[in-house]
Image (cartoon, rainbow, N blue to C red; front, side, top):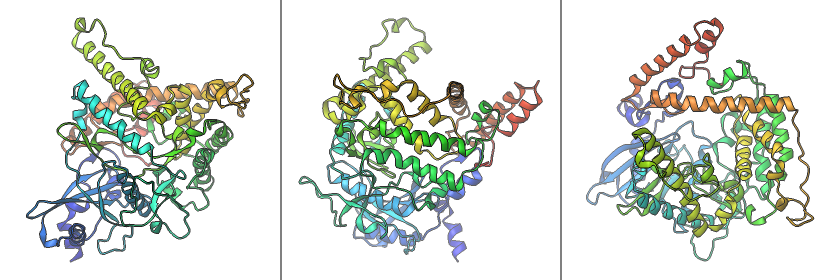
Length: 556
């Protein structure tokens, strides 16, 4: 009977929203989840005081990278609720569900439009047979692809609303950095720091006290990292602790589980002559990072304050009304608090950091020769203007409505470098020994900009002294590292173009409709690559073995 039920509901239990052109045999099991459909219907209906017999329809609504979402519609009034179930591969599952619930309740209490949580379970040993969150369905539509077709005036309206909501988020007072939880959802041996509710908000939602606890971000739990017991996942009480704990986590993993391997990104392997990377090299780089980390903390204490940010603020997670008022922000999984100088930044779909004019906050202007340009040149110029326009007005609205964020952004390359270095120090090591080391080389070379007189002893006065950089690199090592970094950047650009031409995302995903065509195009690109080195048998062999769009062993 159980196997018959699984077969009947296979569409609900398995990933059906797309395909992968490589390693699909790994991706699909990660997303396969069997549960009791009847029990999920029951708890969903009960969450709005209805009976399961009141349900009109139950359907799979969406499948993302970490969760499957179902829509339950009631008879009579057409009321809708959503059920969100994490995949088996989602970690740390119990804490992730608990943290998202507490996060939604807290920020909702501060007048930020997010889905209302109706019910949840962090224990898979329930009648449903899986962890779940039942939440209201937000009305309105995600901006999605229409973001790129809005007029300048329409985009500015959304941008202004977004920054105003961020200002409310930044204003939430938190006692430490880390993930948010209801106290009763934390294991007994895990500490949490209670968040005292402000006078203008009601945090309880009838569920108890909310606290700051361990960080839920995937990089802290990926692979065997979830097994590490003696690492500091939070809460983190000061900025230096936030900077160092994430690197200490990766060192602990490398010491226990690190082994020589190729870079995960197969296209990088040629740049290092197809040699396996050794973990000891990355460990040495992490040790250097730990020496430099205390110097990255600004003397300005206002930049140490823990704040929350949406973890993936992209158009599909922003719901708007017909008048383009923001009426919902969804997908807060893995949200954690960080010191503002580390959390600050312009969202990916808005920022234009690679452009000098954007970097220096210069008002954007259309080229005077726009009308004289050909179609392609004109399209490129308009796209550049759009990106500059978004970047500039995001900063402008932030300066007006969220000055603490504007202060942290500071429009300075060294602050971008600090945040990038912090990110790379915590990234799970997958054979890439270059990125973090290159960041540190840039820091050594630009030390007087990284640690300015304002951050030096003396507080920026005439007597302020910038301390010497605590780390060094041999000239040859620095040059070699930056050379490979440039190679990687070139490879990234080429890969992006090839992925677009094939029609796949960064992990090889494509739509069901495009799957066969994508497979065929990938084969064509592979043939062209092998033919281009036809005069060198070894290069042909390496291209065949390490081709980026074939199945491969992911930890080889």
